[in-house]
Image (cartoon, rainbow, N blue to C red):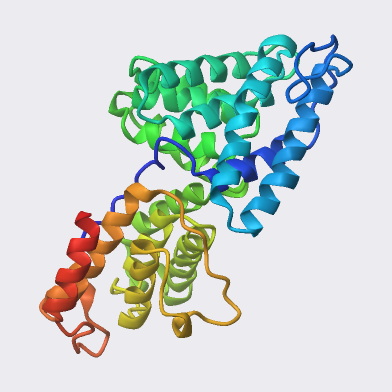
Length: 356
């Protein structure tokens, strides 16, 4: 059953963009100069800063209202309409957050368009390297461009540089991205492990769900080399519960990677095996809807991100339903009884969903 921890996808979904915009709108030093233009963009009497503020207010106001009405066409139109405004502010006022906003929206609406990829990478570069108001999120976006060949030639060292720059300037996602890159750079030797651990921690404490999942993976790697007798039963259970709690945090923060790993945690031979829990969280990772009665009333249902992990969640769930795990020690309870009755017909349904 696959349980890879991977870097998030190439672009954030529109809901994630709105959250980012809210954060970016907090406090940006005031730019100088005025921005001539049409009334629906930057106005002649506005500073670049005022134009940016007005643009983000559209996100906080009209777009939010459209989403409340489930008017996805209007929401999309409003967001797309912000691209020229934010691009204009980026070019004229060198406001890093505006550059990031324009770049991320450009990429979100045209992820497979090579020209749009180059344009978004240019905007990220301008925002990351802006003299007065650099954007850590733009540095993370530029790191993605080099990591995945989105408007830039794929270069691991450049990706690492910009992820680091974003992390140092406070972007938790960039910290997690940098940590995942260290794993792919074996020539760094033993220093890579220390740097990876530190970056996962920075990402997790900064609010990155993937950072928390990466930190959980480190703790589980330690548990794999230990036993309760060797470490002490109380300390072993503390380490186990901390790792599981981090995966839980990643899942309920909206990460499919986190939900996949959290489900897998309930199949481990660590004294917490539970078939119902494993199946429930694989279902969440697989689809954006689960039977309502199955959702605990005090546990808010997460909005999933990372569609590239959806197929893996469905595949893992199908595996759980299609095999007899009784011979496999990770998939049995302490009592030794089988935790998953095979259900080939339902497994086939989930394999098809994952394949699609």
